Image (cartoon, rainbow, N blue to C red; front, side, top):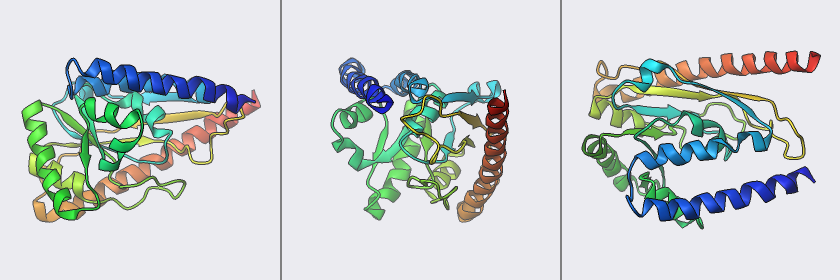
Length: 246
């Protein structure tokens, strides 16, 4: 019964946001401020799913210049949990196939996000340079999921190198964003589905890496994120255990 109630709230809400958002964005199509605005709206769905999300963003990172954000990608709930960490003038990079999702696809493109063809390696390489060019021309930061796919409970998957190529070539820092585990955590027929922590880490300087050290940078970022995720998952487990004792 509870899953039906949630569906009756979430589905119309998402359709309305996508339709209204698409119309709204037509007045200033692909303006990067739209991603921040509507990201905050989607983040409001967290309580509907029974989640208590704590978002930790360091003020000095908010005030810093352009960068490339990298985040772990677990499942579709990332659109709710991680959305609250999206910063102003930040767009995401997604698969070109997203464009064909009813309601969401056109909305995703109009909000200024970047679509790439992952099945075409030649075009993907060209997209890296397009991302760099867009960062400079539009004065934006970019949010990417370096795993390249949803992990679905398999832990932090190995990173692809696109985000790191772009960061080194653009000379901008990488800012990792870690979302504690949500795999097999959310039961739509349960009122409370516990805590999720989203933490933005300190920027990682890329200027000391050359284009031949892309994999070294990717490995370093993977290591610091894996360590942080372990800490966050432990913190969530302890907090939820304490809640059960109360």
